[in-house]
Amino acid sequence: MKNAHRHARLFRARIASFAALLAVIALASSLSAAPGRYLDAAAYDLAGLLPAPPPDDSLATRAELETVYQAQLARTPAQAELARRFDAYSVFHFDSVLGSWFNAENLPFTAVFFEQILADRKAISDTAKNIWNRPRPPLFDKSIRPLLELPSSGAYPSGHSTQAHLWAGLLAAAFPMHGDALRARARELAWSRVVAGVHYPSDIIGGRILGERLAADFLKNAEVQDAIARIRAEAAPFQKSSATGAAAAH
Image 1 (spheres, rainbow, N blue to C red):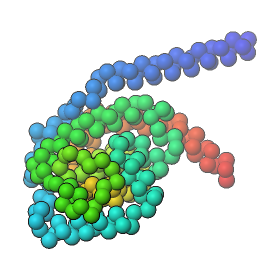
Image 2 (cartoon, one colour):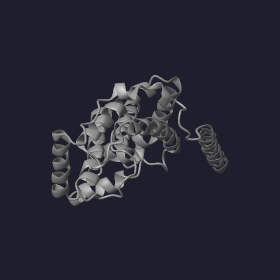
Image 3 (cartoon, helix red, strand yellow):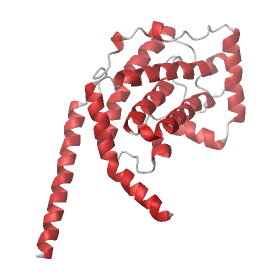
Image 4 (cartoon, one colour):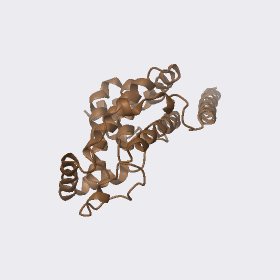
């Protein structure tokens, strides 16, 4: 009898896991990661939303170049490693705040959802970059040696800064108790682009302005609100396990 009950429990667990897998597959099919699912780039007056970057021949740009150069001189191995890691987009760079459980293997719905967010954001920030076509720092000052391959796109606003602050805003909606730490992590990630020599500080500021605006706009969408609830539910077992482990350690 005990074996029968045990087999029944295992069967139900497998059915539940299979159902969850089917749900993620269905989501991946519906979220093709084509831009414009939630937000449309054409709906934004980006030149009106964002302050223009300093002119290329201005004293402000010269001062920014000096800041980038000084960041290069002061760069630590840990900062260099962070810049290299963050060059590849992943919402799971926020695992340092949420915990090691925050990864794509544990959270397949979260991974797929944020790929769609990335596609929508990229279309918008790329449109903004094309307005200004700001040359990147190493193209003005040969003493700046980028740590990473220099992107061909314009510098302003920083897409990585936009993405980091957008992620932080959406994750804070799912995990509000970590809001301050998530936003601090976004600032750290965004600044790594200056440390890497591929952005000016004002690019990072422009990205923050755009990312925070996009986060607010995404959260006005009912589908996104539903997704935030699913992200919270998907994470709940891992958060509970993490909290239990921490309590046991004390």
